[in-house]
Length: 174
Image 1: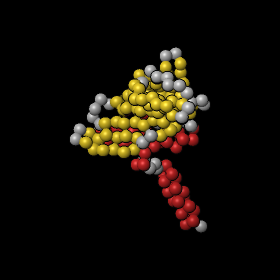
Image 2: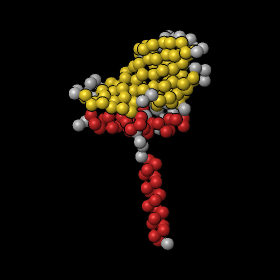
Image 3: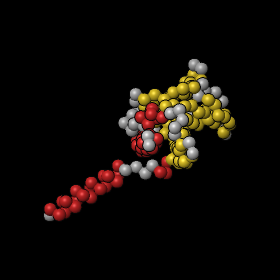
Image 4: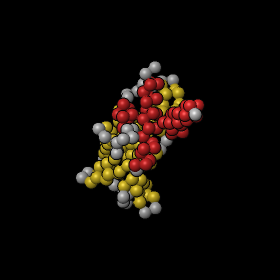
């Protein structure tokens, strides 16, 4: 009986540890270069707007540069409305700045918008807090569009995003 209880405890602990471990390798790519490693997260769709649809983003960071990560994002809108700035918020963490247009292109009855901006990599790591309820707000003059998080997708991805940027921080500190 004691052996069975002990075996059950060991199995439960092992299963809990396996569940807590995140396989991050399928969510980013990296390449070692002479002046530092470049990391790129694969695009993920974590935000949505009732009228406009989804917002997808990816992040690129190169070690030993200026400490800034490049955040690219794609969203859809009814009209081709150039965005001038963006704000990603997760709890107390704010990633914001002027948005630089990469392109606008028609996609069926909507317009696909692709933009980029830069934010401190330390803030990017802190952004991925699975207990937060993040949002993304796009600004075009006096107009705003707020994309809300897809809660289940966030709970699944936030630990992965945090782990990727934790790894980057630890590797850069060599």
